Length: 374
Image (cartoon, rainbow, N blue to C red; front, side, top):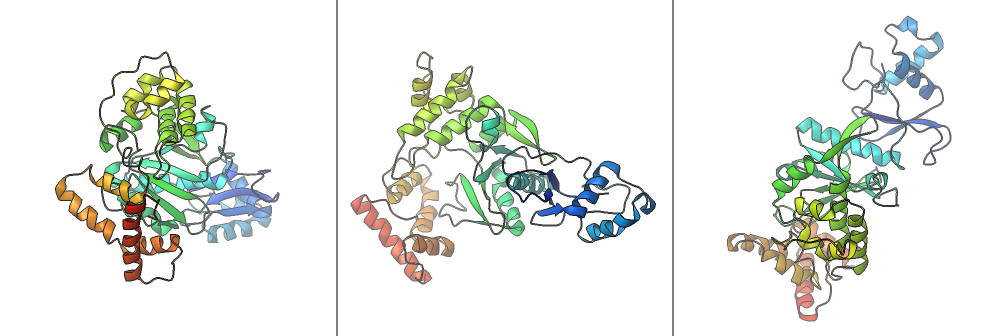
């Protein structure tokens, strides 16, 4: 029987050469494979026929079956947890991005980590945006198991980008850069802009999901009203050095205008303080309740440079926690220091020099108000 972690029927898909018929993710592999010609024909026939003995396979195809078995794409067995029973067409414009959803979902499922896929092309399918493709895959997982999921994806071909907040309670997501896949993964433990704590926010999102199928695997995505609020928060959030873009607020207003009761949807996620202006623009006649709570990761992002933003972020934590956070920012880990030097155009700096110059850039940023490197 044919086996794969995921498989897609891509006949005629513009992303592949005309001869490619099937794209799949091997059970034990870390990169996708393409099938064409006799290999695709025979593998497809096994999906629909599933013969029980060698005699059921045409003599001319049996050698191809054995080759597919050597490649880990066929097993001689009566059952298998990764048996492929049907071939589906891609749900999204990029089949490879669809397979990345499956990689993340399988890793999470194997470890019992609950997760929800957010943003991306599902927004277009829900009628919340026109663009049907995204450059990365965004997943929101149980906050307490965020580090575990990020670490588990490393051996499968993704490396975490250097982040000065990694290992602290400040950062809301980790960006994973691919070695071969060509698709980044953003692993979230929260979304900036909510006033509720991380665990409660994830619980509310997880309980307000639909199940969809991507590459033959069921994954969870937020319901349309919840997804619109998540997308609105992302559109309207401040960016260090640029603040809140009016166009971002307009986009958030357009998203909220699509909902039957946008105020209630925002209120359920503690997003009214962050999206109050977008609500006023999108639904000017709506009665907006008094704002309650402070949006996480919001105010400190609305500063003119990274130095001031980071100082403001420290102010959200107790004195005892601030000391270690200050030291981490002043004298960061090696990967952060070297990446900072690269972005500043000094990639040849040694570690000590990179740390020292990063500190000096931060001080200059405080004195001049200029946006500095991370």
